[in-house]
Length: 622
Image 1 (cartoon, rainbow, N blue to C red):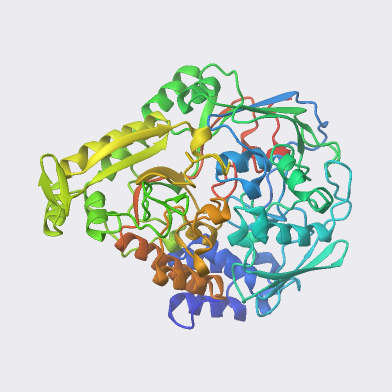
Image 2: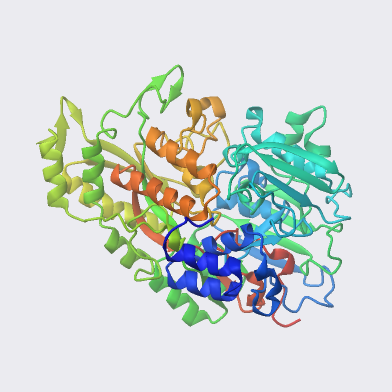
């Protein structure tokens, strides 16, 4: 709850006493600069007394958009055609390493709850969202009771039960399964099925972030015990990667890795008139520009995801084609340069980029500071992205949640100062490249193949080399770079380069899953390494006890404002340590959609995948 001081605390007391309505509370909190997500979580977490009677002033809960879906016929819409230039490698979110795979999973696997575009929590497989008011959330925030909807079936006809919720937790946290969601579900101490439709979830510590593992298409999918819990669990899990059994609106008919997924209607889906489209053709490959063209200009496809395309090209395609529109949401994603704190060129016990082999010069904070100083974020944001307020140059790692936007950080583009920093640290020019004790400042800088990213690489290479670095550029196709395959050593999870670059974003309005990217944890369990099949969230191999302590404190907090402050402090640690170089705060959603689709139900949502509401997608005119 709010700290017992300051104007937000006073506003909170006014709400509890009934002097103001929930709507007035939101308005006042917003005026104080408190982000909507934090405000809503305060509302969701409290037990109302006098406030409960103020129904006329209450805030209507968000709903999952389902405009003009009444009376429609399941499957009447024929084929829905989706372009995803970063093709999925798998369709199992708990093994996925990025949005391209979470997208493919989200048509089939579902969480208990969704995030609405405004950050509120929506019930999905449950009858309601637990709260203190309805008795589903304990006063001390340690116990959550969820009640499943009656009659929900898996796509193979078996019933969904509370045992599946228990099994999901057990499967995800089992190290043998190398789940990429493990760290998110670890705060749960126990789940007990008290009836076929009720589960009681107990957390190791009280936490206002109780909903994080249970909510959203990135980490929250519930999986079937009867499929993955049998005698040959390993074989079942392997098959599940590309043919998951879920409760969602679709099932997989065919899966061509890094190419194409064909889905058909899940005939057991709980809403008999949905989904409207009989099949979904999710086609991967190509590039972002051609995907945009196929929707905006030629109209051959219905939807294209993640248009990392120069803004002038998008404008030309939209204006000249007239077949579709670009959909954007406020900036909540971060294009960033990532530092490898381990040595990718040294092998220890058969493992490259081992924690036992620190990087020979990127562990020098002055070297990292010089790289930051020689990075022209403003030009990158304005030339290759929307720039301005839409996609600005970023100072911070944590973006998109207003109440957690740190006011404490700054950035500067100054190549001459970068030279001075290196010189004073003993890195002197030898020809065009700086050296110290015989060590050369030579970096391999990699990213996925994309026109915008290659242009960004070129800008950074030019400025970094002017400062005295030698820079080798490398590119990997997106399907390989973002692959989840343990044997693929070209992935960003393996991170066998000095520096790489990609986009990531918070998947929750309390962004603990996002902050895990720099959390090492006890015995460094969250560091990406051979022992966890390179599924640890910390690909940078960044180990900082101060950061870890802040994260642990945030996980165990029951105070929304305290969590916000701790997240700001974690952000500040990273920025002050030059552990990451933020480039651009990108739009949370930047997709293209055909005018044939009803836009209301696309529901662009920075917290979820682009297809989170696909059960309700329909045509504008039927």
